[in-house]
Each structure stands twice: as C-alpha cells, then as structure tokens.
Image (cartoon, rainbow, N blue to C red; front, side, top):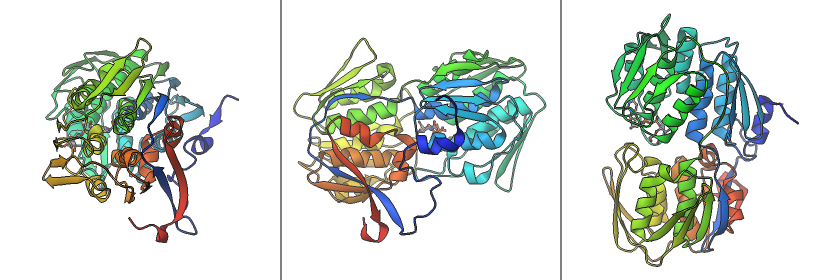
Length: 453
Ligand code: UD1
C-alpha cells in the first residue's frame, strides 16, 4: 500500500545497514564472504545515482509544494538525509524507490550535529534553507576517511550572494533577507560548492553566473530537477552556469539519473573476472573516461539502444596510467575500483590521485591479498601479479570497500571483508545483484574478537 512513513525507511533500506543500530550485545560485525574465481554472467539493474538523490532531496527544500522523486536508491545515506530533512519539518513518505518530500511547512533552519556528522552531504541543506528561509545554521561537516574536505568555496560563494556568514562553535550561520545574484568564480570546480550555490541562486534576486563550475552529471541532474520546479538555469554540465532567480519554486515529479559509479563498479566486477555482462539502465556518456580506460586495458564495451551497456573481455589485459580529475576527467570515485583491476593486469600501471589527499586506504588491503603496489605521495605504482589470494580485509571508505569486493571476486579462495557500513552507504542490494550475476557472496555476522584483519 502507498504511503509508508519515514519510520519504515530503515526497514526498506538494506536490512544489514549499520546506521543507527544499537551496539550489538555480543559485539558482532557484518562480514562479506566472497569466494573468488567464478565468472559472472547475465544482466544487472543499475539504481538511481546516490550523489544525485542526496542533493535533490536537499533541493526539495527550495519548493513551496510537495516534490516526488523517483528512482531513489535504497541506501543508508538516503535514510540519514531523510532524517535530517524531517528534523527541519519536511514530511517524507516512501514507497519503494519513490520518495515524496513535502517541504511546505519547514519549521526549523538548524540541522542537528549528530545527524550532519554522519553524512557530509547533509551540508547541502545550507543553500536551500538560506534561500527559502533567510537563515540557515548547519554544522561544519568535518573531514572523512578520504580527506579534510573543507567548505570554504561554498561559504565564500554564499557571501558573494549577499549572505552574512560566520562560523561559531563549529556551526556555519548564514543570514540574508533575500540573496542577490552575483558573478562567482569558483577557485576549484567543487561539486558540492557548485550545487550549493546553484540551489541558493534559484531564489535569489537577479542573475547569478557560476564560473569554473563542476560539470558532473549530478550537477546537471540537479539543474534539471530545479528547472522542473520552475527555476531558470542554463549551462549546467558546462563550466559556466547561469541562474536567473525566481521568487518561488513549485512542486515536481522527477526521476533521478542512473548511478554512473555503481555502473562503473559492476563494469569492474565483470572486467576482473573476464566476464560478459549487460548493465541497464546506464548513460554511456557519463562513463566516457571509464569506458576509454577499460578499452585501453583490453575490454570491449558496447552500448545498446535501450540504455544498456555490455562489457566483454578480449583476452590479455595490460596496465595503464590513470589520473583522477574533475568531470569529464577520470572520476576519483572509480580510482580504487580500477586499482583492483590493475593489480591483475599485465605490466606496470600508474595511478595518480589529484582530487582527494588520502584516497589510498584500499592499498594495504590489496597488498594483503598479494597485490604489488608501491605508494609515493599521491602516486601508486602497480606491478601486475598473476593472481590474488583471499584474505581477511577491511574497507576504509565506500569506494575502497567496493574495490576490495571486486578484487575478492577474482581472488583465489575465500575473502572476508569487514567495514560493510561503508558499502551500505552507497550500494543498493549489492550482494543480491552480485549473486544474480553468479557470484558467490554471503553476508555473515561474526564476533569482532574472531575477526582480525
Ligand atoms: C562529491 C561527491 C563525491 C566525489 C566528489 C568528487 C557527493 C555527495 N559526493 O563530493 O562522491 O568523490 O564530489 O567528484 O556528491 N574542496 C576544497 N574546498 C571546498 C570544497 C572542496 O578544498 O570548499 C576540495 C575537497 O577537499 C576535495 C576537492 O575539492 O579535495 C573535491 O571536492 P568536491 O568536488 O567538493 O567533492 P564533494 O562535493 O565533497
């Protein structure tokens, strides 16, 4: 039946989600057991993009009427964002992948620290809250496993839009009776800053031009969502975005784009096991850099007319060079996943991480599985090895944990992966999807004391 309350979100999300679970009395943790060496086959369904869904949920705060989001992935992060919006007064109901958000009567403009600290993306609320309410108080999101992740570009931009912004006791306070359009140059094409400023500018007086904006598909998806609510935005997906402010935004019914990083993850799972699988739905143009690298390593990729993408192995796989960059460059979110593949590719590979300062947490764990990787600063040199062997390992962040799972699919014997709270943040029904492709993957509960990685 239609209309489940937010209380049921937790049950709808991964049943194994660790978010908000009380500490287990027996101090148990979830482990993913993977028996490697089995080829994958068949078709896998790609969910809606996590990074779009999170920002669109915050973007719904801009509307004066109810918004419906479709193709929302079932993830712990979505659940966390829903809770934050609920504390602000947004009424939320969910039915499978449809989320209804009614922000008509926002009652609060301050987001609670306990929730914001769980989910960096909740900082997105600052732009819409400020634009709609004239005031926003959002705790600094802080760093995470992959880097310090400051927000000074967001703050500087909001000031340029006329807001008074100051930080006190770890909380960003922002005030403006009505924001005023401005020409803003971003020192770096930050995805979050572009999205925050774009949302804020939709309700500002006059025209805003964002120069050196992020061009990620999720930025374009947010712009399309805002336009469907009556915003005037041009150029999203390019370096220059122009927003003509309007006084009010109305409700909408909007479907989120397919997740290009989830699609990339399944491409890696197929590539490392030399498999032939079909992914759908995908937008191949969002995966241009990923597809180009896979082709140079030795894979065949064929889009079809129905938003499908097939990957096939063509024999020998050779190493390559990768440098992460803002879109349309090679995505940092695919770096760990490609590294897993390169550990088994012939010859040397070089991976340079330029976006985040601490994104090699997967390397010691891959080495534990037999990979040959040396790190110097932000550069990893990988010498391909003939095989990986299963071992107990721990994921340190979302994509690192996905990369370890991909490596485990090709490793000899059993790999036991801890750190699944990261995986549950970003992959909907991951094990079920892998099992559907023929992988042998099992989630088990294990006493922490018996698990030493
Ligand atoms: C988003 C994505 C994340 C992805 C990243 C880069 C979401 C929810 N997350 O994160 O999955 O890995 O884009 O593609 O969409 N920076 C500053 N100052 C700022 C803002 C950013 O120095 O004010 C730095 C960051 O520390 C980082 C780099 O810029 O080193 C890129 O960050 P940014 O593009 O903002 O990433 P996020 O929006 O946080």
